[in-house]
Image (cartoon, rainbow, N blue to C red; front, side, top):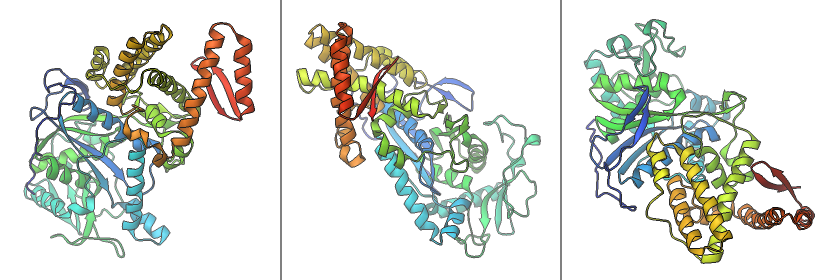
Length: 484
């Protein structure tokens, strides 16, 4: 399994920054602190992100991880790095096999349908496609080679067609999750027989009648979840890479077991570990098993995808997001204020290209552990300055502020003038977006009337909107509308 570092071609420097000229700082789970980021190869960043287990369609909690790392990737590119992002697909596991039996369909058909649904969700919310998106079932030879190497090194053993990792053979086991081996309760399936220690984990599972399987030197079977990622990271990123990412729930057992396998095999593996927090409902992690998931395909029928991206992408990646309709409406209102400013300047001055540089305060926030909330505050401050310039009939000032706003939104993947969002009909947002823009213009006129204390005009505008089937509600964060 000849893993090698990906090629690092000519640096793409659209904003004129050179890697290493600034310091990006990131919270490393393994160090339990924020560390200066120093890449293995100058000018390059290699990232492995645990992607989807495609046993069902994605909810917004699933997509949050991809979105957070999409923003991280965009920021590295802004800072002048050539980024290689590997995001895997786990297309075989117990849940997929169970779904296939329940539905009377081939396991691969269920996996493929849901893989398509995940990619549609990522695309809808404006995530850039990964450099490579490998499937687990396409890398069985690499997994066999890794198991063979681990057995030869005394880290693994085969019994009854299963292959297990011997956790006691790896003294640094559990350092990432900061647990004690003696207190460990390792997740284990009933069919995992023959273990020397109940805490050992399965890398390969012996075949059951009627289940998918592949031939190995130890018998037919299928891969365990953890082995897949160690093998694919080695194949595409080599023996050492910069960043390994995923959700908080993956720290143990998945990432802990990945480390044991990869380092037991001889790899240096990841230098930094980044984990995003969950989307919760009533304080619980959003999950299908709890019945509290909100499918992306359903959400995009009721909310513009760019608003969903704003809602999921603007909290800090290490902060929990408590899902609620109210929070989504607040996000919609906040983003509408940004869009309203953009539209007014474009109507007054025509197309405005993004600035070559983002404001220093925005860059400082993003360099500090991807501080998107602080960076977003700079966006809104710049919008207010731009609106003030419009009110003062300062066209040049308004245009300059819009150029800065577009540069900042571009880094966040939220520029409504970007061609990714311009073709809104394909993402089911076009009609809602047009209506929202028109209503915002009317609401701005109403707000202007209220500011000059012309309440009769303000009330008349509200009444006209209500006659058109729209309800206007005044909130501390500004007016918002909904269908009556």
